[in-house]
Length: 372
Ligand SMILES: [Zn+2]
Image (cartoon, rainbow, N blue to C red; front, side):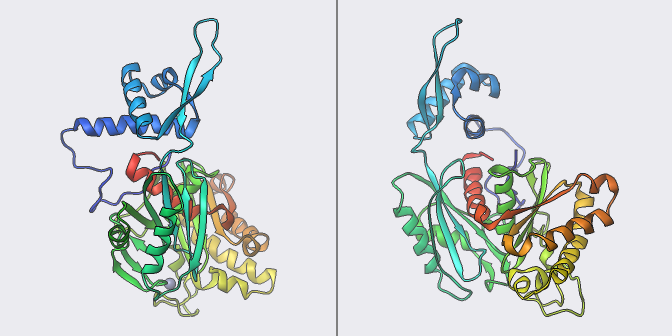
């Protein structure tokens, strides 16, 4: 299972100060256990839930009744009985359960949004033009339209944005959007009157690949390749924030000190070679292989240090497949312990997987319901 990263400061969920456990915390935790089981494993009986969560039958019945009343769960028919007794009634996530509004700010020139259900399905999708310097109302207008596009109750709004984002949803620094100390979550919450949670785009994508995709639940490193280059790290099922809240920022590792000026102020960052616009200019496989080798050299110490076996490149498949991907694999194989090299897989998650959108929804699901 994965957990969304929680930085220590200004956090509302997780990592509460050690102290007396309030009854409401216990209840919230038990509700999360039930929802988690149903999200991961599909419909099952109350008896199954009691066995799997180690909660009593009475507690399960009580909480399931509450979750049905709130619209999260429904009774979904029966499982044929055995000779032991009557058929068991199955409960599962309601087809009309509350949904999340998700926004993806990671692409250049556009803002994507969606209505996403509790199991990560995108029910409505829209996109609008959005560039650095555009008015904030472009974001709040899209969120409002999506809110009006679904009759279902809305749990909250999740945003995946480039840059360093703190646990309260303030964008500390996003050079590509020109934001510094911008209270993105707070501004949108005031505009739309819903709970809003924001996270770094690569981090929420890494969570989505683990929660909804085929990612290794134990640990993965996801590299986003678009207008910029970012990275998200999950280790032992937890997304890492790091004390600087900037973990995964591998796009700004300098790979050529004589190279081109980067948005961050340095020269020759990995991003200046690997971002999609730079890759589009390359005309030969040899040039793509050279970039793949640079990426492999940046990834090797990270993968080796953390003991990660699943490396995912998330970007335009037509630019990454073939020479570049092969070269990343070769660079990793050459530069780390054979034990590690034989076990690491480097693979591609195409942009069509919509990992930032579903990851933004996963952030809301975790913060609001405790479901990972
Ligand atoms: Zn840079």
